Image 1 (cartoon, rainbow, N blue to C red):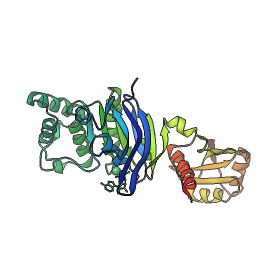
Image 2 (image 1 turned 120 degrees about the vertical axis):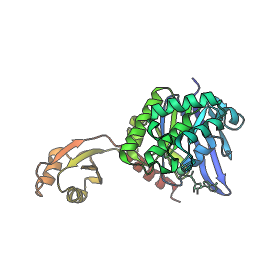
Image 3 (image 1 turned 90 degrees about the vertical axis):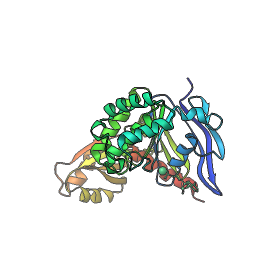
Image 4 (image 1 turned 120 degrees about the horizontal axis):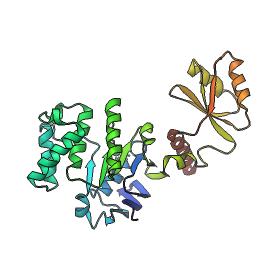
Length: 316
Ligand code: ADP
Ligand code: MG
């Protein structure tokens, strides 16, 4: 089957600066694709090219089998876009914003009214229909932006940092909506800074200074050989006080790296350092009730390892 989104050698240069460098990926229908990377790495530029707002310098891409350059008008009818900047009209009400977007997509009035009702019910916007968008909280603004992007029933929705700056409850609710949209067969292209959100995606990519350095489903990325070097394993260790524990274990020659993750320390240790000795290294220094277990890498581990490997490669 033709992938829903396919990019081949996608490249964008602004003058002599390369913002997106030879990016390749393909994404199937209904996927939740998480696009991660530090600020300024080219995420928004990729989205702008895919949505037909910027022309690639080199390379090409297809959405639903249509070419982003030659079929741009037809593509626009099938995609929704939530930009990184607040793109709603602050002085228009929720209902008026939805009406405006419906018109923008060329829907007839009756269809706009029908969609406004369906989406207000679906997204819980009914109590706010007559409120000005500028007066909504961050989470509700994002729901309105999503409603506006869904007016014309798109097959693909691009969401550029949809959860930046919204509270954790609104963040979780937005993700539940994304899961539901994906279950309905809508393909979602989401950029984010949050590693925990990457874990929720069915497919993820990491772009680092304009180059894609990782692409795949979370579990296959965690099994990449670069991520857990040969002869090492990952452990979770917990006891209080955690920062002192971390400091103590960091000093041991068998520990290659160590960091705190939530309530525990994550260590990358030499394979030949047995669990009972690891535990004894703690108890000998006064830590009791030391909890220790072997764990798979997190996506954050994956991206950190791949970034370090990439930096090594780029050294002159
Ligand atoms: P991200 O979304 O990952 O933060 P962007 O795609 O917005 O990154 O930007 C990638 C790089 O391209 C940045 O260094 C940015 O300054 C640069 N850039 C983006 N748009 C333009 C433009 N229109 N003109 C010149 N440089 C740009
Ligand atoms: Mg951006």
